[in-house]
Every structure is written in structure tokens, then in C-alpha cells.
Length: 252
Length: 191
Image 1 (spheres, rainbow over the protein chains, first blue to last red):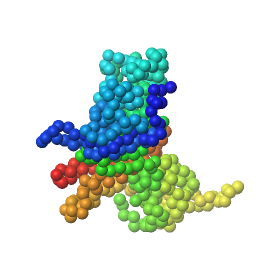
Image 2: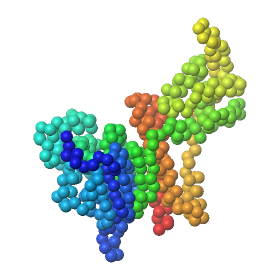
Image 3: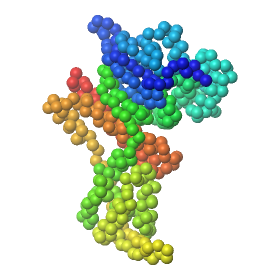
């Protein structure tokens, strides 16, 4: 059904080669990203952690085509995207990438269901199909009874769940989430955590930039960044209970 | 912790903390006499997925040792269709021990001192980059957090074992926050 079928579904969903990003010039030159090589497999959930200013948000912006690299390449589903025209890039972002931001970025004057259906409408779906999809997605994030509410009538956690539903509107190849729980209290964080864990289980390719260790721990793979480069990588395999017993103080 | 002079138990198999098991078995027997099988089932319920680390032998070995130490006694109860069952009963000494254990406020030792000194020593000797050691440690704890969190998410609402897993998650989060502070400090120090 979807416009992303023209893009390759074999090979990594996202791939970078020698990715560099610099800001400023002369004395003020900052290397935000330094020779980053990344591959995200289809269906994989990857968490990127690091202190503020380490380059993790810059990486997400380059992967999502929100900024262009100073050097290097970004590939999405077999297509090189860093040299696309602004127009082609905007179109690709709409149909193939779902964004989730710390500050939600919902349209204040639209209801929850209208926010969720908007990307589908912009991608050319019929109003009826877009609404049906939006209703399904709100149910998936547990907000059916909030569909007609404006964002101002929703809690922070509910707003972020609407934003996640919106990110899924066009069945994106990848969801890019930038500090999705950065503005949330611990109860709302737990709701978003369950939702992200559900997305992972359902095989949605997902890249999460976060400093929240619980959110990072939902991932299949974890990368730490420091000073614009990857410094540590771990596959968070499904834990053995033996290790859990040790952590719980049963073994030692 | 009270002195364990009356019962000294060697750890018989792969490092399982028998001390915990022995005190819990005594406490479970404080309510009523019970069979090894029932005691094991109650431990399993409390531990949920963590009970995998507890094999049947742990419970029976521990009960034998508690009996030798005079904290429990046992009697055989005949069954018509099966072999006799051993029923364990708490003694007065066992009861006193349970009360001591319940009221003891000692807490498992926190780990920071050794890791802190490791970083100080690594930096002083130029043996390794403390920031790198912190990153490695963070990833090891995050792998543990991932395991605990997935197990916690898999527990049904209201599960008592879920409460234990939440404790594991929260302690790891606290350790991870401290490691962030370590990373900041040593990152600035190396300039």
C-alpha cells in the first residue's frame, strides 16, 4: 500500500560513510561529527547515548535529512540522500521517515487525531484512509478517548504518544526519536518506554537518541558517542536470568 | 547481620547466595510446618524469572544444613500413594533467628569505592583512560538494565516478582547516574 515500496528493503535501512559535520569557521570551528560509520539493519532498534554536545542530535538530523553533512554520505534504503534537492528530500522525509522530538512539535490548533492524520494527508492519502489510519494509531498508543482533544488539553506523556502515532502515520522505513522522554516525568517516561518496546517487538526500525538509560535499554544495540565519534558499542541481547540473579543480589 | 556462628554454610554450587535462601526458608516456616516442595514453590513465586537460578537441590541442601544446626526439625509423614514426605518445623532457635533477620537493617554493600579507586589508579599510573573504563562499565550495566527491564515488562500487572525486578532497574539507574558523573569528571580532568 505504501509509497516506500520503491525503496530497497534489502540491506541496511540506514547507512553512513565517513560522515562529518562542522559548524562555524576559523577559531570557532566545531567538529560536531567525525568520520561516523553507521549501519542500521531493518527491524533493528538502535540507541545512541552521550553527553550533551557529543554530536548525537546532529547525527539524527543528518540521518533524517534535516541537515546536510560537511562530508561523507547518508544512504536510506539503498538511496543516497545527502545530495538530493530540498524538494526531493522533503518528500522523502514525509513518506519514509517518522520523527519524534523532545518538544513533541504538535500543531496546537489541531486535535490529536488531526495531528496524527496530517502526514498521511500531506503524502496524498485520501481523507478517509488517513483518518482510518490515524484512529488505528491512536488506539495503538492508548489514546482513543483523547482523539478530539487539542494538545493543550493533553499531558506531556499523552502529547508524546500522539507524536509517536503521528510518526507512524506513513509506515516509515525508520523512526528517528530525539530525546523522546526529555520533557517527561517518570510515569510518562514509562508509558513511552512501553510504547517504544512495543515498536521494537513489532519490527519497526527505530533510532533513538537519548540520555535516559531506561529508554536506551529498550534497544537491540547501544552506541555511545563522545566528541563527535562512536566510542563504545554493545549488543543488548535478551538478558539471561543468571545475570539478573547476580544483579538482584541472589548470586555473587 | 547477626553472627552466623550456628550455621556455616559453604556455597555448594555456582555462587548462589545460600545465605538468602536459608533465612527465607526459616521465615517461611515461621507460619507453619511445610514440605521442601512447597517451600521451593513459594520461593519461585517471589522470584519470578529469577527463580531459574534456584535449582531444587538448593532448597533441600539448605534444609538439611538448617536441621543439623538445630534451627529446624523434620518428621516423616506417610503418604499412601507416594514415598514418605519430610515435613520441616521451625525450632525456638530457628524462630529467634528469623526475628533477628527480619529486624536486621544491614544492606548489600554498594560498589562505588572499588570502581572509584580503579579510575584513580588508572589515571595516576597512566595505565588506561578512565573515561574509556567508565564507558565500558556503563555498557555492562546497561546490558543488565536491558535484561532487567525486559523481564519487568514481561511480568503481569501486580506481580510480586515484578517488584523485585523494579528494584534491580532502579539500583542500576542510580549506578548509571553516578557513572555519568564519573565520565564528566574524568573527561574534564584529561582536558
